[in-house]
Amino acid sequence: MAVTRTFSIIKPDATRRNLTGAVTKMLEEAGLRVVASKRIQMTRQQAEGFYEVHKERPFYGELVDFMVSGPVVVQVLEGEDAVKRNRDVMGATNPADADEGTIRKAYAESIEANSVHGSDSDENADKEIRFFFDEDELVG
Ligand code: CMP
Image (cartoon, rainbow, N blue to C red; front, top):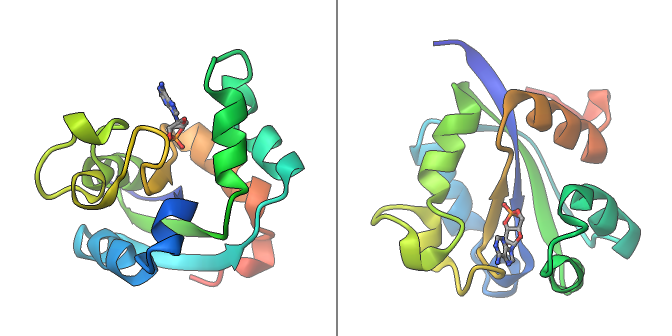
């Protein structure tokens, strides 16, 4: 299995509850390495751009409002089959459907305030990493 990278966001509901370390611990215990990380206040323009694929969805406006409601931690994670590994430890989008042992089962408040985002493909991981990080910030 190849070592690949994925992109993660620890969302405002988790940073607000001081869960950055707890979430990161679960990512690390799942075999992912944090190779870049920064805590940022996303601008509305960044949030709209990042979630552009969901523009026509009814929840888009509220999703953007939520993502700018407090600081987030954007991270690049590396590991074997990183996209799937991260999605497995995150659990289902809706915490009501998330399996035991997943981040969303442990910490998510709702389908919107669901504590973490993770890329859904290698191609999107690459795009999402480049959306938030410059090459020289990926220190390994
Ligand atoms: P994320 O992986 O960040 O990608 C899109 C986000 O939209 C998703 O996680 C959820 O937090 C959010 N969202 C809010 N409402 C819904 C919904 N009804 N269905 C899917 N995603 C939703």
